Image (cartoon, rainbow, N blue to C red; front, side):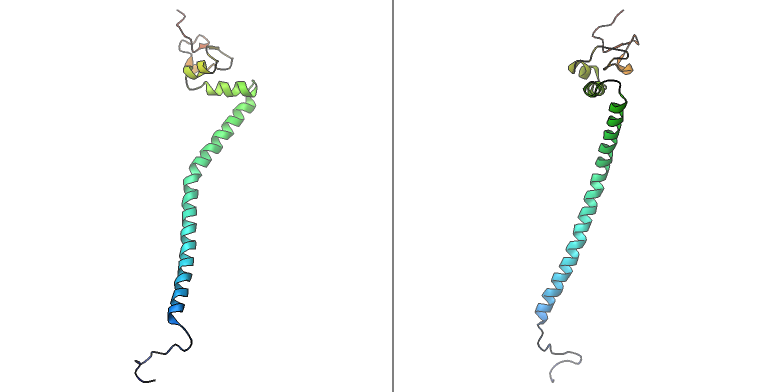
Length: 122
């Protein structure tokens, strides 16, 4: 056919615009799969540390409750009184004597075997 540059062909029966749209859709599908997988990996990376921490905390509490000489609810109250005497008083375990639920050595200021005293026994 005259008038076309050398190497150019006429697309008989094919629509180049439609083929281009199909090709763009295929590239978009591949790109979408890639970005979906990347977002999922990012989410898993963000969740990993909190999930490990929660699993560790659950394991520690389970071991402590299992090894405790007290019933479950008393053990949970005992563990809840660990941070401060205010919490121990709020849940009704203060003052506590050595060996009783609610007694923690770091809350026994004068080492007399009684924690979270409201007044000094001198």
